[in-house]
Image 1 (cartoon, rainbow, N blue to C red):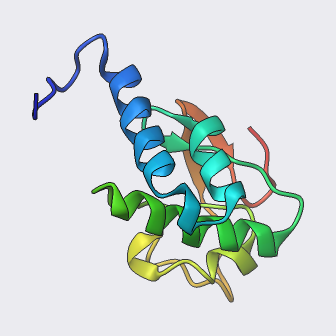
Image 2 (image 1 turned 30 degrees about the horizontal axis):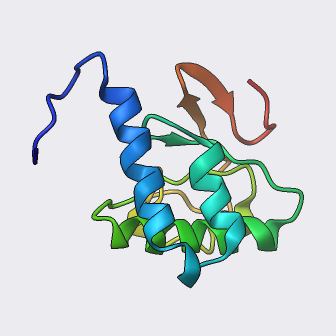
Length: 123
């Protein structure tokens, strides 16, 4: 099969299976933490990982884009509560490409249907 029906009951499972397959097929080329992020931190099309260090978050974000690109996925709409990490994300992949990191506050976003105040990192 080459096509899956959008909105089918099985869609969340199929989406996660496809993402995990892309990570598994490319695991030897990338940071193990990025592969683990695909396996543990995606819910349908949202990735919600958490990091203690900004450098780790930046590295994993970059690796996620590459891993999933190899599987035919274009990862987009990155948002983080760290302006330092957000500065490492290409503008076209950011959830808020017009955001001025020097003066603007981070926006309120939605994650899995819940409002996330990125500036204060509160749900």
